[in-house]
Amino acid sequence: MAAFVAHQGWVAPMDRSNVDTDAMMPKQYLKCIFKSGYGDWAFDDWRYLDAGDVDVDVSTRRKNPDFELNKTIYQGASILLSRENFGCGSSREHAVWGIRDMGFKVVIATSFADIFYNNCFNNGILALTLKPEQIERLFELSGDKAMSLTVNLQEKRVTLANGEFYSFELEENRRFKMLNGLDNVATTLLKKQAIQDFEKQHKQTHPYYFTPLR
Image 1 (cartoon, rainbow, N blue to C red):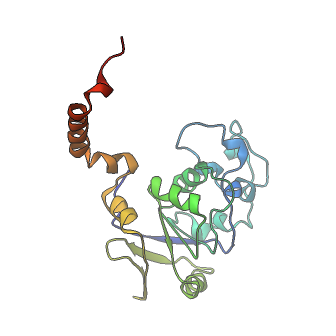
Image 2 (cartoon, helix red, strand yellow; image 1 turned 90 degrees about the vertical axis):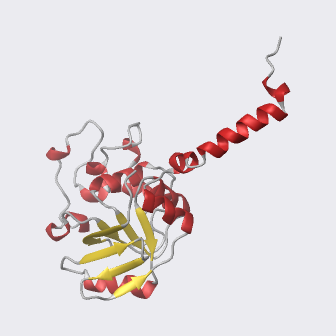
């Protein structure tokens, strides 16, 4: 997983509350077992006018011109802005894979559903919360024009192009792992020597656990 220290990117505003994972990644795509390649299917039912499936070529499908993320000014955006309870619904990790494969590195919202929030950090996406009035301000500024933000995880700060900035909080454990590009397994392996020392001592003090059965 790549380390995340700071990121500057364009914002794509999704002015919706309770955006659920079923909408982010419909059920027909959950049959895939790989962890990448879901970008063309993210927000599938909102994004396209034609029904899709894993074996349907997305280039043959008509895009919905009314879907906010289809607008030309938001193409290439890497910061997704939304409102409260983002990521509610089922626990499908595919939803996060789809958003990540669309190119989003940061999701900013008023609040997140717990499982989706955890899945973001497990897959290298920074999910951060801001106060409702700050979210409202960002929506006002990003309405019909492209807006750039700088998200600095080291300083725990979101900075606008005009110099305006907002501080955010994040659990130190999550922050440490993101700053260093560590997933749960890599974080555990930081204690590899301590684990090996414990195993060696445990074998010495409890040898009967390791005696083969006859």
